[in-house]
Image (cartoon, rainbow, N blue to C red; front, top):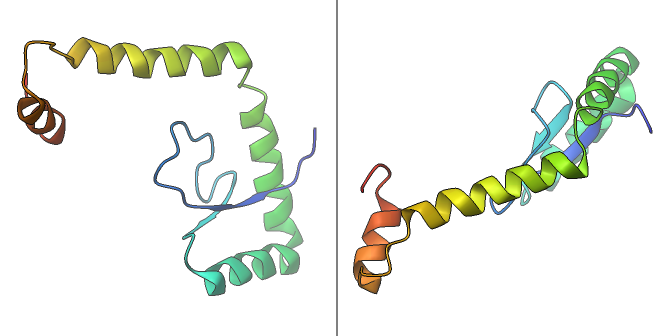
Length: 103
């Protein structure tokens, strides 16, 4: 397993993210090529930062396993299903999911 830092493109559709910006790598907006280039140049120019982020990422990656990923995905499904009420209309479901905490 490598100990290199990551430059990650932000993706609002990601279900689970294991990277903490500034701790394991650098997170940039998907539609910002200037920021992407800057992040790559920063890591290329600062070997100390590169080593720190890479080492932290390796430690964090060691805590993940397929069993843990499965647990997290199942948890998301269970949470979603616990909020589902088959007696609600489609409009009530949209309102229910749009407003956090609405029962």
